[in-house]
Image 1 (cartoon, rainbow, N blue to C red):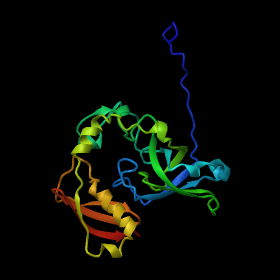
Image 2 (image 1 turned 135 degrees about the vertical axis):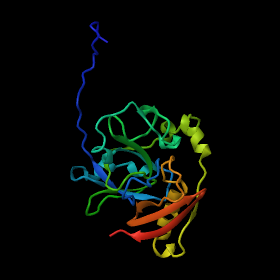
Image 3 (image 1 turned 90 degrees about the vertical axis):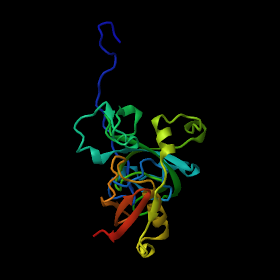
Image 4 (image 1 turned 90 degrees about the horizontal axis):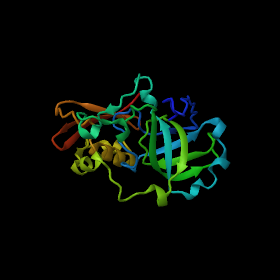
Length: 243
């Protein structure tokens, strides 16, 4: 601080331009895994914007197994009018407030998300330019990507780190038993069926909703999946093709 009490830092406005967008099977926010890597069967394609469709910019990236994505919580931009210093984390049932910087809530001063995903392969020469194929993404289809960085195990991994309030809630969470309709294998391919099962096992409902009669729906892989939950069992009622 300067002697007159004013900060020595100037408040500046920065402009960030998306370098890419990701294509995933998640057509709505509801049902998306709450963290990257929780459902490793979900795959995505990162397609670069024209100015960044430069193969040389990816030189050496193929040697890494995982990458960091910095992205835009684009769906909350038109909803959020101002930021709040506290939010209600879903893991705590939506009833307890925590500091926004102690959470990964999308409702933040700057709507920036961070995800670690597995890099499956790189296709350098396609009609859309270089494409990154990734696994374990927790991003809505069409999400803007601000930056891509390699994941470095020797510095980014901290096995003994404390997870704060999420340590307790993670231990308390038990997967739901998921019951599909008999004809489900004729509706979804095997890999997407495995991914959908894992998404539903984690209970995509808000933690404060426990109405056994309520019917929920998620949009996944071009399908509308409707389900109910009773006790520890999730019953998929039907799976319909969207459009």
